[in-house]
Amino acid sequence: MALAAGKKSAQQCYLSSKVDSADNPFLKYYNLSWDNPSLANKQNVYLKQRIEDGASYNEQALYWLGRYNIEQAEDLADIDIVFFIDQLEKVAQQSGEAWMEAEVTFLDALTLMDQREYALAQVKLESVKLNAEHLGYQLLLARSLKWLANIDVERSNYNDALDRYQEAYEIFSSRSDNQQLARLLSNIASVYINMEEWETASHYSQRAFEWYGRSGINNAYIESILHINAGVIDKYLGNERQRKFHVDKALKLSAKTRSVRIKTIALINLSAYYLDHGDEPAAMTAAEQCLAMARRHGGKNGISVANCHESLSEAFYSSERTEQALYYAKLALSVYESNRIQHRMIYVYELLAKIYESGDDYQQALHYFKKYSELGRSYLFDIRRKELFDMQERYDTHVKEKEIQLLKAENALTSSRLAERKASENMLKLGTALIIILLYWLYRRYSMLNKDKQVLEQSNAQLETQSNKDPLTTLHNRRFLERWLKNMPVIDYRHGGLVVVIDIDHFKKFNDDYGHNVGDEVLVEMAKRLKAVVRQRDVVVRWGGEEFIMIVSCRESESERVLQRIKQQISTADFSLSCGDYSVTVSMGAIFTKSATQLCQEWVSLLLKADRALYQVKASGRNNYKLETSYQLSTSSTAT
Image 1: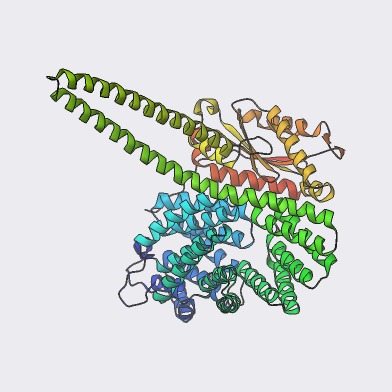
Image 2: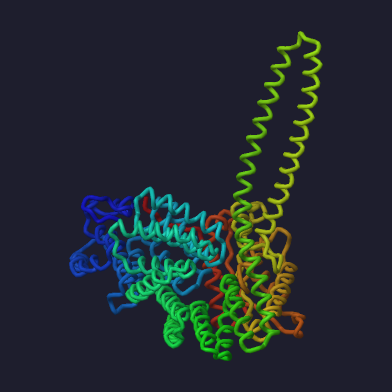
């Protein structure tokens, strides 16, 4: 974003209505914190004094948002960045301003993203998106769309990611938010990196640098992301000189930021560069630094730690230390398989095949090479097939519409010419023959088009069914639930509904002790038992991993009985698995809502409360349930 005097910031479109004037020093400070955090930091003492002398709630909120942006990008103060979120939350509670509450939720989601806690981050970002749409806060809406797309990329949902990026891009472009455009273009480049479309990825990466360079931005956080992606692209395009430049810049810039995720990725890329150039000791050092940092700050699900384990495994493999290489590769694979991160699973399968081959264990090498080949082929094929199918479908529909119009025009023209030549008997006969031939041809073409249409409709119906089903358990999935909530049968829930979040206790132990095949058996049997306990109008969804969600139509007085019935259905009989019979228990968090309308409109809040109850059960020993008190409709005021 250009810093020339007089240019109106994109953020002012909404926030300028919250302060006294467009030249308000707190608003200027907040805008500058995006583009040039170091320069904005020089105003901290002056504005802090202004707050102590008596600033409005909106001015205080802009100050703490600016402090957050500065510390995220520059890491200048010896304070946990959560401190700034807490200060903003206090101001939001005191003022009751809806836009501040939405910003607090957004920053909470970014903290979860940095810890790779994508499921919880998505719930919060969906809530922010709804609130931003309601408030008309377009820049916050676009930021939430961008981060939701980032989650789609992590889950390999590239079509959904590109759709969200496109929607965010249009908002950022219309408001000339250049620093967000630079970040967004780099994120789009990451989509094509994962799809191994290197030339396209390079195109978007270069555009990101162009936006960043010509806009006068000086933000270490943003610039480090741009250099990380550019370094990966240069590796696969063979631009080693440029690659080293980007790797070094990313490492230097990431060290200034608060983001553990960016710091660990920069170290992983540095380790990979050293390995590619035969410097195993330097590669090992970078990977060990990555692991130490990830263990301290990498989040609960272990994805950051797994990334560093993968990097260490590569270093040990390059140093011909097979046992250590196998150890760290299997640690990484366990986490990737638990979280279904397919593009990393593919890479580690190939790495394990190479390690076993170097140790002359050809049977294991063949085993992992087959897994690499099968998953890799289906993964890349499915991604490209989905994109090509969508493109082909749109193209075919357009072409066939044109063909039908052309046929109608030809038919009308032929009929007109035949009418003009009615006087001639020979021409009439010829015209009649031509009409017959044309009608037959039209009928054949119409039949072919109709057949194509039926095939396309059947294919679409099959894709619709597949997109709404979990392939392992055959339960409905998250996408089905989102659509169901929009078109739910209100009459079935006229007495209210019970929202239940279910988590299998100690599920990771089955995967670790007996392998993921046994873990899949547990999930399949759990799905059967959950389906057996509900009626046809109730909803059972596999939310992800070992988590399930049930929505049960019942009265509030029946809630406890429903939860006891679910618990009994699961724990009464052991699960018959291929490794033997085992007792399986679950932890459940639930909340009752009296209104079908509320169930649809305030779904995110209901889910968060049920999820919080679940974690309380897990913290108190598992194998139990907790029913939250009945949820009341929100009455908090919102700013316009």
